[in-house]
Amino acid sequence: MKKLSVLFGAVMMVVSVGMAKAQKIATLDLVSVLNAMPEKKKADTDLKAFLDAKESEIKKKTDAMQAKYALYTKEAPTKTEAENKARGDEMQKLQAEAQQMSERAQKDLAEKEKLAYAPIEKKVMDAVNKVAKANSYEYVMDVNSTGLIYKGGPDATPAVKKELGLQ
Image (cartoon, rainbow, N blue to C red; front, side, top):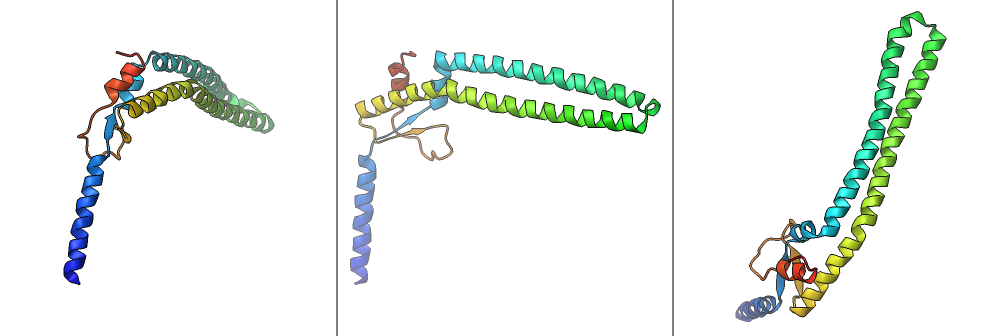
C-alpha cells in the first residue's frame, strides 16, 4: 500500500510538471510601456500643472493665515480678552478652511487622475489582450510586481509597445 501511494505521488508530480510546462507565460514591463506612451506623458504633465496650481492656492491661503497670526500675536497684549478670543476663533476657522481646501484638492486630484489614466489603462489592457491571444500566452505577468518569482519566459513588452505603435 505504501508503494502504491509513493507511485501515485510520483505520477502526480510528473503530470503537474508537464502541465506547468504546457502553459505559456510571458512577462511585461508595464512601467516601461506606460512611460513610453505620449498619452501618459501628457496626462502626467496636465496633472502636475493642476497640482502645482492647487498647491499655490493653498500656499497663498496659509501664508495669509500665518501673517494674520503673527499680527494677532504681536497685538494680543494691547487687545481685550474678548477681542483676543474672537481673533483666536477666527484663526481656528481659517485653519479649518485651509484644511478643507487641502482635502478638496486631494479629492480633485484623485478624480482627475482617474479620468486621465482610465483611457490609457484601457488602451494598454486591450493591447496586452491582443498580444496575449496572438501569441497564445495563458498568463502575462508584470515584472514590476512583487509576486514575480521567476522570469524565464518570453517578454511581451516589445510586442505590446509595437501594438501601441511606440517603437
